[in-house]
Structures are given as structure tokens and as C-alpha cells.
Amino acid sequence: MLLTTLFSSNQSKTPCNLCGGTETWIIGECDRHNQPLRTVLCQTCGLAWTDPQPDSEMIQRFYEKDYRKQYKGTFKPKKKHTYRAGRVAMHRLHQLSEYLTEGSELLDLGSGGGEFVFLMQQQGLSVMGIEPNEGYAQYAQKDLGLPIQNGFISDQLPVEKSFDVITMFHVLEHLQDPKSRVGLLAQHLKEGGHLIIEVPNIEAICHYPGNCYHFAHLYHFNAETLAFFGQLNGLKCVFVDHSDYGGNVTVVLKKEANFVPIKTDYQTNANKVYDILKNHTVIRHILQPNTHYRTLKKQIGQICELVSVSKASDQKEALLMAIQSH
Image 1: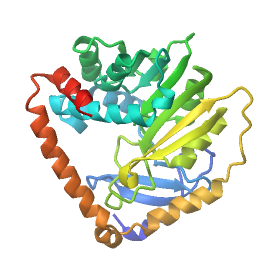
Image 2 (image 1 turned 120 degrees about the vertical axis):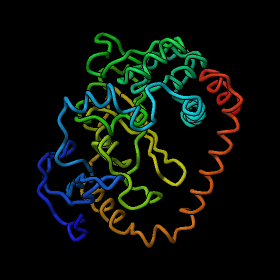
Image 3 (image 1 turned 120 degrees about the horizontal axis):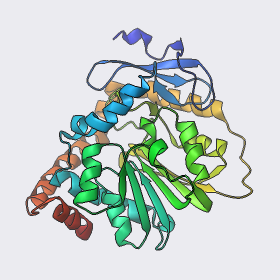
Image 4 (image 1 turned 180 degrees about the vertical axis):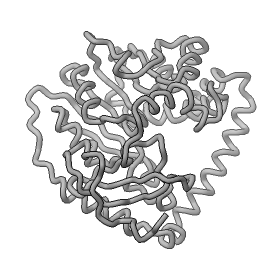
């Protein structure tokens, strides 16, 4: 990697999915494993993406067969995975309880092992999920008895059905055309319904510089670009939240009958993201107290998780333990 190319201007091979621009800054030349992967930031709006984009058929095969194996080391979730996902699901319930009310019809996209769907079912919501990975979808169907379909959004989305809530936790960054997908989901929301999106936050400085780019993430967002995508599809951003240390960003987009989009200040957002990334240097990262505190907290959490999981006889029991202990 030639460090002199970072943050230089570049003509992207792929037009920006948000604003259509092609003038970009290069913000990465390799992935987290030091393999070649160019990532660019739009100079007009602040959206970032992999350039050039990988082949769509290769992406589909990857998510059907290899994604969970590569990132989790297994075709089927282990006890530690369901326990961890159960705790995350409980956090999301508390964070978003205003929008997750009993009796609502909810669609969860990228359901994984079904832990969030399982919890929502317990809360009295009418739920269904879609998961592209065969192993995880089969586990959710057979072991947890959940209404989760194996496939992709374009194949499994019910044509004539609309929902009160659609959730996408760490899904949008994997999609080749975020704008059209948000538009499609907006059509499947009831009036007054909510689209909930959580993604990694490109503004996060809790990660080692450049350590957030990898093959599976085709796009990188902040709260503003997520809100921009909503506005383009008639959805109003009504809630924004960031996780501890800012690693993830969550937005809630509402479908309103007479929604009038506010003026979008694309340029200010682009400049803001550029400045954050350029100023997030290795030295500054190492000198941040939160860098070391976060590492220590993570290690302690893993030990506590290991102790808890060792008491569970199987994945479902680990999930129930996580829900009950939160």
C-alpha cells in the first residue's frame, strides 16, 4: 500500500449510490487483513464504498455459503454466538422499545440465528425474518422453530404484505444498492411504520485506523447518510443513537403521509467525515484512553461470557440465559 495515495482525490469507477457523484477521496487501500481493497469517500455527500464493487454473483454465493463460516468459523451458531446475540437483542429491545410494541407486525432482515426474532416473538409481536445464510437459517427454523425464510430480500419479501416495523441490523452495508433497497422497504411499511437500521459507523475512532474495511462491507455510513437515504425514499429520520465508543450507529426512519424532506447539506457531511478520518491517526488512536479501556472491557466480557456459556447445555439454553440475565 502506498500511504501517499490515502486521502488523495480519485475518479471512482462506481458512481455514488446516494448522490451519483464520481469525485472521491481514497480512504483505504487494503482491508483489515492487509489484503488489497480500495475504499473511497464521496466528495459530494460523505458516503463511502468499495471501488470497484465485486461481482454480484460472487457476493450472493459468499453470503449463502461462506459468510458465517468466515466470520464465525461455523455453519451453525455455537452457544457463545447465541448467548452474545441474545444479549445484543435485549439491548436493542431496551433501546428501541418505543417502536417495538406488542401486536405489531415486524420483519427482520438478516436474522442470523434468529435471536432477535425469538425475543420479539416473546414480546408478543407478529414476526418473520429473512436470512441468506443456509446454515443459520436452518438452525433458526429447526432448533428455534422460528418463521425465518432462507434467501435474499428480493426473493423472500412478501409482495402484498406491509409491516409496522422492519429491522435491518448490520445488513445495509452488505447490499450492492442501498438506495433501491431502502426504497423497496419503504413500500412495505404501513403508514406510520418504522424502518430501523443499524450499521457500523464510518466516523468511529474506536477502531485502529483503516481496520474497518473488508470485503463483506460494500458501503460505509454515518447517521447523516442514512437519513439522506431515508429522505430520498419519503422516510423521516426520527431517532439516532450511537453505541458505546461510537462503533455503530442506529437510525429509525418513519413513513409519514405528508413528509416534506428538509434541505440536505451533502457537502458539510462529506467534509466532516473526511476530517474525522484524516485526523484519526495511529498515534492519536494509541494515545486515546478509551482505546485501552475498551480492550480491557472486551477481555473481561469474554471471560464472563465463557463462564456463563459453560453452564448452558445447548444453543437455545444459552440464548434463554442471555435474555433472562440482561
